[in-house]
Image 1 (cartoon, rainbow, N blue to C red):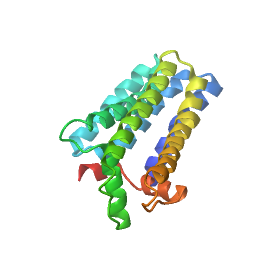
Image 2 (image 1 turned 90 degrees about the horizontal axis):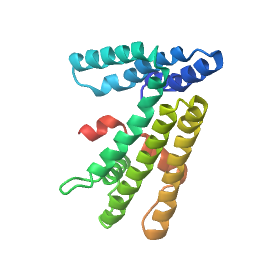
Image 3 (image 1 turned 120 degrees about the vertical axis):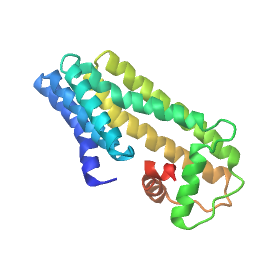
Image 4 (image 1 turned 90 degrees about the vertical axis):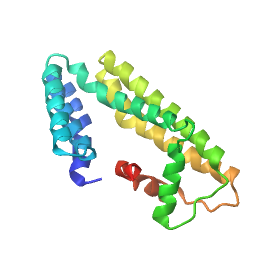
Length: 202
């Protein structure tokens, strides 16, 4: 991920925190254009990018008067990701985790195992549930404007749950497939972090 996108992502909770400390909830409206910057490269064509930014600016104007609106996007994104994971379990689709595994093996120049189909489908369903649950909690906190709890959940809770789920998957995979070669936790996390959204468009 380019550095400027990482900066935009990091500034989102910083702006929310600053608005909380300063007692200026309207400052949260700045979060919406920041979030739009993250998604601009994912849209093909200038028209789509202009439309996205225009929509973000329009929502930012509304968020000046409804500051809680600026807290909704992370929850919506998590729920959307969970639904996407679940949708890939349909007949004729390749489960997301199977695609992740193939991309990791392609990046490492190794062969993906052919005996883990059920395992990969099961973990796709598991991740769909985890991501959706994270999103639902974030949306609930946003709806009631619990800003401090929202910050803790989005900045600390959600990443910790995701890292814990990755670690659990790795530990269980070592037990279920003891004869396969398995990376260490750090290498596993680096392999996962290397996968970008545009890889799935190939």
